[in-house]
Image (cartoon, rainbow over all chains, first blue to last red; front, side, top):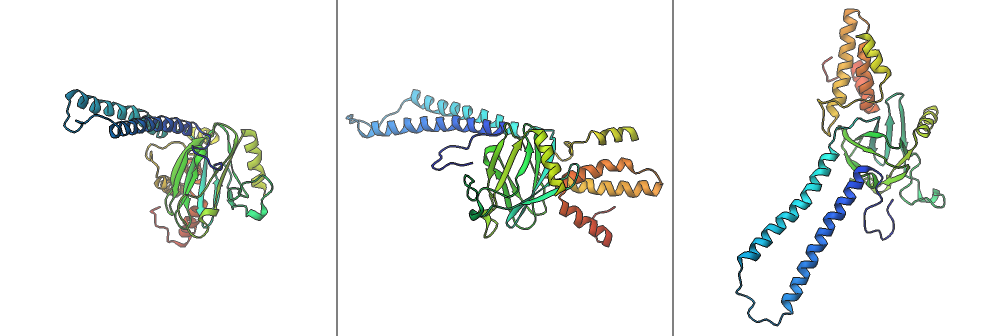
Length: 229
Length: 86
């Protein structure tokens, strides 16, 4: 989940998010280096004692500051395209879960074997136990087995919503009448939070997403328990 | 043939990758399998043959389609207002 005065991304919980995080570090470092260089040049040009500053040219520097930026752009583009194609790889999911957006809660359907469906409402602030997170906790979490490729089909029953879990690197719009597919692997067990990411009315900020990744045996136990209820 | 379907159904985990629907929008995938199941049922019933091969399509559409969509389509089929051709 997010922390107060956080600057960077949340810790990655999926391989794709790890890649995105490292790519962001790489691109941001390039941005910082270029900005520092430009700032230095500006300060140097403003504070120089030289008087003949305005009628200058040089073929050599023109070549350098054309080739070097092109090279830097390639240095950014290659990892970027690598991740883009990585995200588009054909995966073979072990489990399909449908996440349906409603005003103002999510419902999850696990229908590969039996018909398991349940609603997930935000826990009101007055009902929180000590240590729980305000506006992020839900009464029923979307439980998934850890280290398994999961396919999530996102849709909505009324207006536009969006299903997002930043630490898994996932965001997918929930459009009524359309079934949007996204996939991920939770690389470690844990609880991962997200919030509805498309304005959907009065309680848009109060329909969080909570994903809990557990070992397979616990997932199986949980799903049998849920089916009994 | 029937044994292959049985074997496939027993090993079923979830709807596999379908190359006809490789992209983000899986609406047609769900719709297609729903139609295919009911067409298969209708065709094999008409021939008087065992409809077990149709179960594959049923497993796939159950995996992919939201429960509310399936209920709506089932009601429409009963009323005779279902928009698809079965």
